[in-house]
Image 1: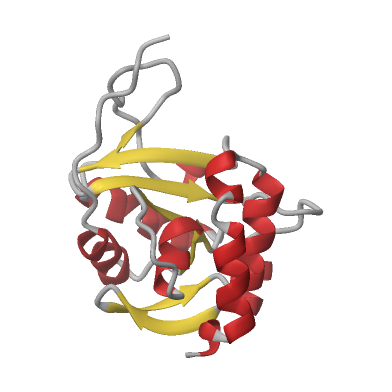
Image 2: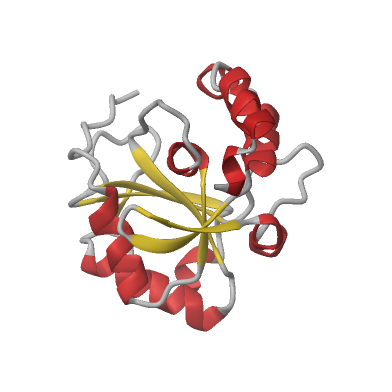
Length: 174
């Protein structure tokens, strides 16, 4: 299996700013959402769950095109060109794109204990906050914790004790 090429350094403000300029509705999930809640770690990518309505997915495709996004394919060293329009997201529940400013994971159905996470469920519990230079919907700490627990990956599980302490302190209500 070919080792993936290294991504460019993450510039989350450029990525998120481009999404905002295009009017993309999404919930920020994963490590970057945890950082916005006060988690002291770092992340290498932007994870998001977009509103799946067709006009929003068309705006997402436009933003990704502006970012020169290419699809990361398991087993391929370099990302590949991929046609981006509102139908591009129909075949996958998760796609990782390499952009000029770092990797972007578009996750239509994030890991959840009961498989129920989607944009609507995440948006309902999300916290609206100014972060990384724009106003964002951040997945709630409860949802981040549930998703990382359900994923079960070592890198996610090691985050849980500190995320749970942040939740206990009430940091997601800042």
